[in-house]
Every structure is written in structure tokens, then in C-alpha cells.
Amino acid sequence: MIAKQNHSTANILLFLTSFIAAKWFYDTFLKVYAHYISNYGMDFALFLNVIITLILSYFTFVLLKFCCTQQITSSTIIISYLIYSLLLVYVIFLKNIGHQGLVLDPLSFIHDIANGSRFVPAMNLLMFIPLGFLYPPTKANFSLSLLGLILLECCQYVFHLGVLDLGDISLNAISLLIGNFFHLSCLPRWIKEHMTGKPHQS
Image 1 (cartoon, rainbow, N blue to C red):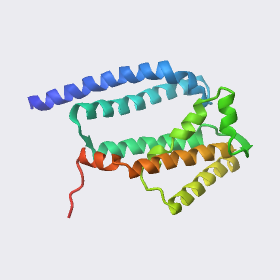
Image 2: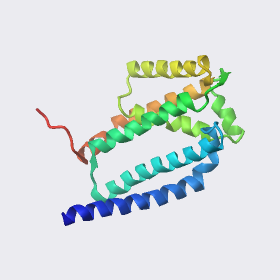
Image 3: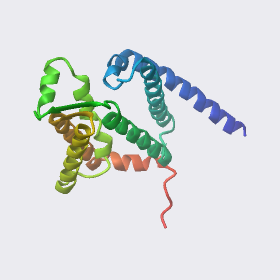
Image 4: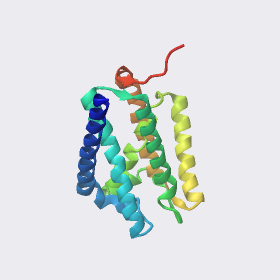
């Protein structure tokens, strides 16, 4: 019982530490870019700031917990991907409701970077890495992935959920490929070696 209480206390202290670190990181480095994903007024922006801080706190907690125990549970990975999936849904379909645009330059991100807008290209380059990590880089997988990205961008345009930007598709495709090549690295085996709560083999 005492050991369990000590474990719970340690987790609470670790999460508080994670929350403080996440809030500092968000306020210092990310808050200035919040307007890119918050287009529905001040109240929603404040709510989104809280949600992002809590999400960063969770992932910081997972990282610190791993550093302390050298273990990660399968449920933690599932929860992390669930949070990631919800974030993708929001960023792709919900952050620009009512907006519509068309950019047919597959290198439009170069123009954005040259004009000082680096946040959106950086996010487009990073946002699909965890998804690409789930499968290997084959021609069939790449073709299906590219088709999926095109369909997502078309949905944004047709349903007035954002801009159909070929530059976004280019960066998102590179993002998936980066994740694919992580899949081929020793990282998946390393994660399995440190995973607890794995399903039993029959």
C-alpha cells in the first residue's frame, strides 16, 4: 500500500513538473503562432491554449516517465496516437471552417519561407511523421498515401474547410516518407524492447 501511494505521489509530482515545463515551452516558443490554428474568437483561443498546454504536458510526462523507468506501456502508445489523430482531424478539417482557397504551385512553401512564414511549412513537414512511422516505404504505400493526401486537400476545398495547396501536399508527402524511413530504422525494435503490457502470444 505504501509503495502504491509513493508511486502515485511520484506520478503527481512528475505531472506537475511536466505541466510547468510544457506551459513554459508553449508560452515561450509556440503561443505566438497560435493564431494559425485558432480562428474563432478570443474565448476559443484561450480554450485552445489550455488544451495545447495539457497535451504538451501529457507528452512531456510520458517522456520524463520513460527517462525514469526506461519502460513505456502499450496503452500509452495507443493514447498518444489517439491524441495525435484528434489533433490531425482538427488541423485538417476544423481549424478553417468557412474558408476556401486554391494554390496550384507544388513549391509554394518555398515562397512562404522566403516571406518569413516558417511555422506552417514546418508543421506540414512534421505533422505526418507519426503516421508514416506505422508502415514501410513501398511504392504501393506511397501511392495510397499520396492519393489520401490529395483527397484530404480536395475535401478542404470542396467543403470550404481550408485551402487546397499543392505545396502542403508536397511537404505532407515528405513528412510521411520521413516516418516511413523511421519505420525501417531500429526504432520500432527499440520501442518493443522497452514496451510493457504487450498482448500475450497464443
